[in-house]
Length: 157
Image (cartoon, rainbow, N blue to C red):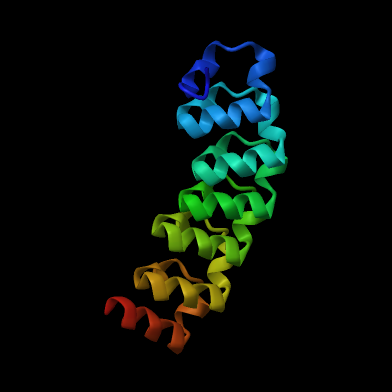
């Protein structure tokens, strides 16, 4: 039934809603089917990895341990940069993860760990995408001639 209508999962037995293959099949048919997945599946790294590849924002439902998994978060932000909001704090401090999120969606930067704004290389990459984010950088980084020049070249500040 879920192959034709993913939302049929809502009326399925609890054991069926806990079956990874059935829930993933339902999800591929209809994204909304995930809201009927058994809570135990959200602690299953492989299940979450498949789910975030379809819709990065479902990272929000994942178990805390899974939200701390760098590879799961990287897959989520590749699909939707705003998924960064739901990542564990340590992953939000990972330069590569945050830059990946930013390239997918500029607004993801608001979820970056504050320590990254003191990282010259991170800020340099960020201002090359959006010069206006210079305002978030640490004062020492904002005083760096090359960082400011990159921001100005991008947005003519």
